[in-house]
Image (cartoon, rainbow, N blue to C red; front, top):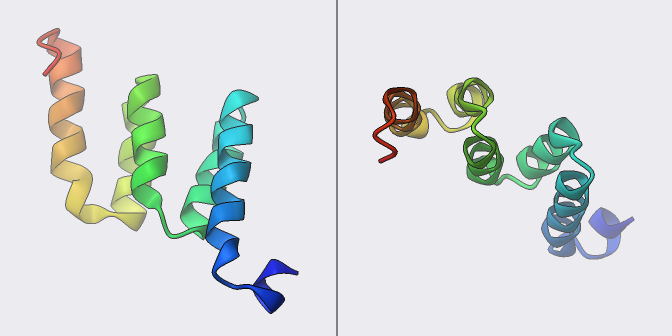
Length: 84
């Protein structure tokens, strides 16, 4: 309905839904909201904040390939314990 009457509000609605799904620990649903809102970097951040680098890489490879190297670096740093 929002798409029909106010397309600009769709992104905000999806972002609010994503936050709700994160609170419920329904990360896949939150990811879908971020992707639909054209905000894949927020899905990637969600997964990196959770320490789920394989999921962050999966999203980046498909929706934000320019972030793949950055995520790989964070993953390697977390694996080696440097935390940078």
